[in-house]
Every structure is written in C-alpha cells, then in structure tokens.
Length: 307
Image (cartoon, rainbow, N blue to C red; front, side, top):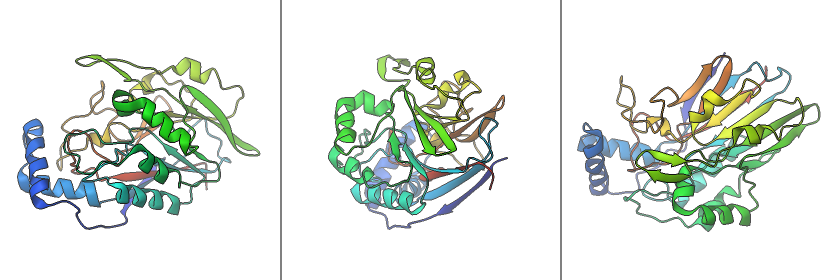
C-alpha cells in the first residue's frame, strides 16, 4: 500500500517579469495549442515559485519489512533561470537536507537547455550546491539524456570535482549492519540522438544487475522510466524521473505530452506492475519552455519498510 501526500514549502516571489512569462507562454502555446497567456503566466509562476515534498511509504515484496530506509529524490534539476536560478537550486538543496533522509539520490539532467534561459548556472555552481546535500548513507547521482546530449564531459567533471559519486551501469552495497541493500545506477537510455525519435542508449541493465553479488535487496536508479518493463522482480524498487510528470497537465485531463514510448503509462507517481514497484518523480526544472501546470516542482521522499 502506498501513502501519498504533498505539501507546499518555501513560497517565493516571482523572479521574472510578466512580459517574460507571457513570452514564454506564447512560445509554448504553439506546441500545446491550449495554453493562453494568463494560464502561461500562472504556469511560469508555478515552475519558478512552487516547491512540494511528495511522500511515499511502501513495502515492496522484495524489501524486508525490518529494513527501514528513507530516501530523498532530486530529479531533473535543469538549473538555469528563469525558474531554476542558482538561488533556487540552493533552496532545493536546503529543502532536501531538511528532510533528514537516510539517503539522497539525484537522477540526472542538471542544467537547462531550453531557449528561454535567462540565467546561466555554470556546472561548478550547481554542482557546488549539490555538494551540500547530506545523508548518513551518502548522496549518489546518475546521468540524464540532457547531460549526454549537451555536455556529458562537463557534467562528469563537475560531479567528480565535488566528490559526488555517479553510478553508471554500476552498483554499490550500502546500509547499516543487518540492513544492507544494493543501490544500482543505470546508464542513460537516450544518450545518443541518431535521428528523429531514434536514440542509442548506454544503459546495460543485465550488466548492472550482474554486479550484485549478494541476496540483499536492490534499488535501481534510472533516469528514464521506460526501462521498467525489463526490470526483473529481483529489484525491490525503481526510481526514475525524466517525464516531468508531463510538465503541463490541464485540470481533469491527461498530460499533453510525455517523453516516453509508453505514453502516460509511466508519466508520474507510484507504478505497480506484476508485483514490481517504480516511483516516477515529477522533477524540479523544466524542458522546452520554463512552464509547469498541474505538476509543481517536487522533491520525492520515499520511506521503505514497515513503521
């Protein structure tokens, strides 16, 4: 059973002009077809000022009830103004640290690449903020498709300079004595763009899971959720991002567009299929345009094991 709740934290004033919001909204209207200027202004404010913590509590079949673990999940930071300037990144880090989770994971896509960027956040700056993340069991990262498409070498170097370990088709055994678990990180599934809607990934699921050498439970980190149908039941929980929850979700409607081969099947939230569990974060930043509607920026907090 999943217990899900959300609460808004850290309210902030809008940091872009109304003209800028409308311009961004009109740009997106060409793609969405239904976002009017007033709605776009609201969506831009939601992207840049809202911040919620979404809580999940679950005990998947492959996770021992006695293994109590809390995880803070930061996905799709996309640092860069107008909605994710450096000050905003710092707020996200402060909010994540305030949760005092046992483990923090960061699921890739570290910098903004849309054409409406108003504040460039250098790699050293966002990485320096992420370096402030704290958790008793550590902080681990993976890479996303935007990292690969635009500057994977720079992202690798930035994380390396602040000693933030990145798992790429690798797994580590961590946890307290008697409550060990494997944390596995998958390579990106869309790393190389080959053509329209054609990609070649660097993901190696079987090779990653082959590095797991004990019967301790497994948590898999994957930027894109599309790997989920291939994930075996031996994995207790998959954590993913990438979709932004659709980013634009009109009330009472399905998301207009989800970057997934499965449509909105894995768009957002707690997914259970054939006894396997995945949580897809709606993420924090934005892609294409700096707007969010109905999918506020979120930090996900997962609690495993029975209280």
